[in-house]
Image 1: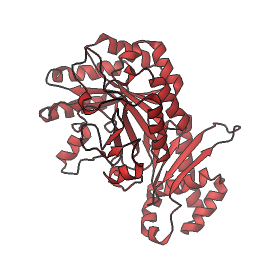
Image 2 (image 1 turned 45 degrees about the horizontal axis):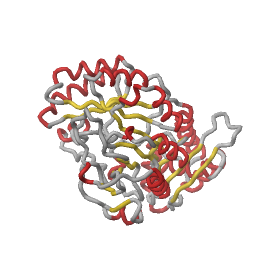
Image 3 (image 1 turned 180 degrees about the vertical axis):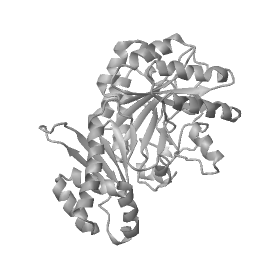
Image 4 (image 1 turned 90 degrees about the vertical axis):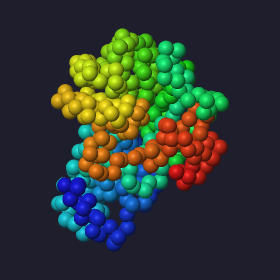
Length: 385
């Protein structure tokens, strides 16, 4: 129903002024059945994003953003129904039905455990990349380029001369939050090699940022360390699969029972392509329900598509827009290429990448420095994309 009203809004959008662009917050009363906090960002076209309990980002079309705006302003259901019905000359009954659908979605997200970090309300996942927005939806923070000694894939340490201190990273996160960025991912290198990572996660939680981590997961073989991140407020984990490493499976078994959203990323290579579906099946047996996949080379595209079909048969949700190695060769991009459509490109639009020294790039591997998060105003960095 929200989709129908959204289409109707398109016809009269120019005639009705949208709710004011800006950032708004709301804290449910302590006696609410399910206490929650909301952080709303409205764009100049009337669309928006709603951060629910600092744990998931809900993308909103103009209809839903209108309801969210009045909700965070403390209006009752009855008041919202009357306001929207009058503004758009639509029946109160239709408006209330549409509002109930929106509130039901929010309520389900408030009460759902293991939330996906990003959710969409009647909006295709590709759509936000084509929109003009005031700030990215996500900032990928490479807190270090250090890697484990056994890791043969060296991070680009020659690009940076130093790592930001704990206080400098906190300053960068505050600046991101003030700019309206709702979601950060700690990446690297291997982010768990920074001793202050739990402190940085706690800072993100304090600010209200949705916070994730891209990691090899090997530090999670130590349950105490895993708990330190969870207690600090970590919202989701993306683990890079190392199927031949026993410690990867040990870490995965520690993570999966916890109350946190988990995605595993598996890269198809010439060496593992023949047993890739076996890897997926083993992950499924460990209750992994969210999978990210990519191919090392385009020559593996056909095999990757077959693996994608097998993942669907196993009931796995396929994620492609979190930061991962070889991210341009994923099933969604390959499918769109085959259909002769534009491949979605979020680099510099939906997300930005922050290097260990604070330099901002459109994305990992895109060697265009837009500025420095600590030295430059964010507005100037955003304009340089």
